[in-house]
Length: 518
Image (cartoon, rainbow, N blue to C red):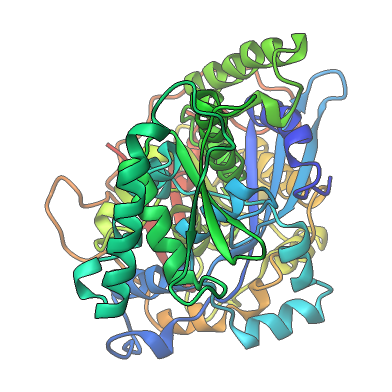
């Protein structure tokens, strides 16, 4: 399903419902760039460490942005005895979306830098991706760290930013004289303007010293004086900006009530800007229901709006109790971008990154690691579509697990794994492929990432014992589980397949990342 800024809020409840009911959630991204090598402080060595690869990914994620967010929710359908998928594709707008006065003001507060790689742009457009859709149809987002900024709180409360105030002492003598004259004019009328029976028509008119149109500096100085000295008054340009009219907010819909309305609109602008981040919060099992303004979906105070809050809290509880298994192909780069865009700045240490990621996503499956574990440096580096082609040709799609003497032998697979493991691994490919395009468009251009890890299997740098990730050989063997699984369905998370393949992702060609969590 194609989602854009025109139908995002209307479709949001159904997307959250799909996430809350999903056994697996797969994400596919398109970025405005993927290589940051020219911008690194030092060149990347031919055989980099895991930390050096992460440094490159961190710089790229903070420099570029996600242009499209593809989401596939996968669930087992007992009646059909097969997996069913629901797919949603969202272009993401790098700025603030909305034509309201509050949204335009928010755009000046949340002024992001947008960088686009011409190489990535050419490749994306060559595959039918329209960069214009990002700006005309893109869904906005507000990261968790951005939402916590003091500037956002000040915007909601209607407070002028500290850097927006003009330091009068640094102005020219002519400007200081204009400021002093307006201050005196306002001060003489201040007590009169504060009287309750003053009509709005009893306004203060402020002209420039030369009786011409007021310039932007003069208007800002007048606004600053009014905000400082007259609590329930506002200044408005009149007669094409020839003068400013300072009047009391005392008519219908004005005064204190008018201020409350503006507060509501500013708060709603921030809620609207949160946009796509709500989906990431849901996937990570974070609270999201209270961040959704029902007025963006239904009329205020309607029966549907009241029911919506109950429904969203239900989805939130389901996801807090059980997050879906997070699936992707070549996930390491994607996880860096997702954290940078929806959470906040990436930590400098790769150990801190994998710990944070393991806490946010306790169950991760990287299909590239799934298909390449156990291979060596001379094996081909397959993109996602090539992995599916190999599976269709009848080749074993998943490398064999280490020997398991306690399992009954399976002759065709050389006693390495039971048939249900192979069948389950193949079913993952079919479920994802049936609902998404074959591979990330940037996957074929992965040579910048792949070149970082040529000729040597990467291992994590030495760190404290509490953070060093165990290798598969060091990981304690799980106790055998007794599961009555329907043929064709995937193993449960506590079965042996995920003991060897879960919470690991491919880094470069043959390096790996183990997500530790707590």
